[in-house]
Image (cartoon, rainbow, N blue to C red; front, top):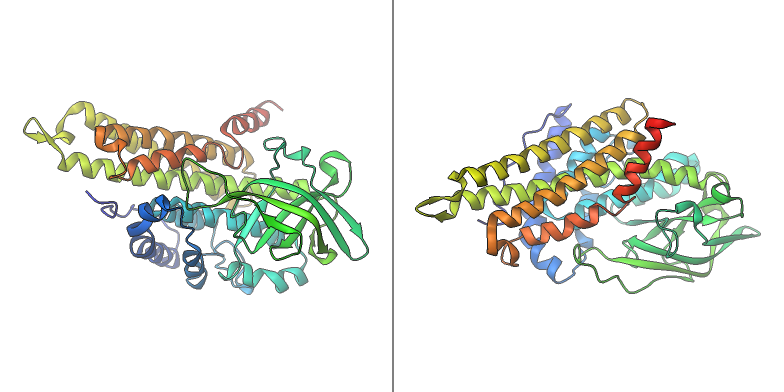
Length: 386
């Protein structure tokens, strides 16, 4: 059984164009990502060229308007592209989700002049983004951020530290939440900061248990002078912008989780059909077949949940609660499925000779990023009782 031995997911897609996009994604995943994923993750190699390839293929700006070079695709389609990429290599699938999150403020709240000036390069593959909200002392308490932007003439002078930033130190731009006044959440604004701005730097990447190919680092702002024209929306509007982006970003994480779980399930099924004990394939033993059945059910349920939330978003309906539910369920399911995949392989599953141990390590972070699953439960509970 090899990591490339997976079969395509049978998908319900709304258009022929969507089917072509998923076929293109699957081809890129099979030929450009999956074959070297384990080796490059072990070596902590960041696949920057893969993101340029996604951009040139039109996959880096799928949810955004065609006039800026985007694909104008519904979230229902975009998320399934993320799922396919994450199944091949989570560093790339999650990287696409984070990049889309980084473009959200400009694409949704920026002026027409700002979008025309910056968005085409951001979604064309040449500019890779990072989303800077969390800080060393304010992760789940996003409204408590302290990074300060002081207006001086036609510039903002930014000082502070962002933490746990995916693509920190390798991104080309940072969509950065900053404090422009002391008025709590109403004192937060958004600046689109070029990474080559003097005074902006990335710290050494965190030493993580998984997703080693995706750098996660602090981003430091030391008297960084950012032109005022890079303020997105109005001063004080940043917290609302950030939360709106996270609703969509959580759907991206849910899709990533389903992708990782699907990869683990496919590998476990293939192994169980080939591995023999007591004169027959282990897949024939009821105890193991029941385990695979539960894994498959969790994957399908997660996919249905994130797609239902995506269709609400596409229809213009509220979807905050549904996004939180999808993120919560899909990432918890991915943790269970990947752990069970290791169990199916037994001792071999605990070795780096097979990718399931990597899937298990990668699944864990999905329960934490873009709002821990405890925060998701808090969001869901509040919508039910308020």
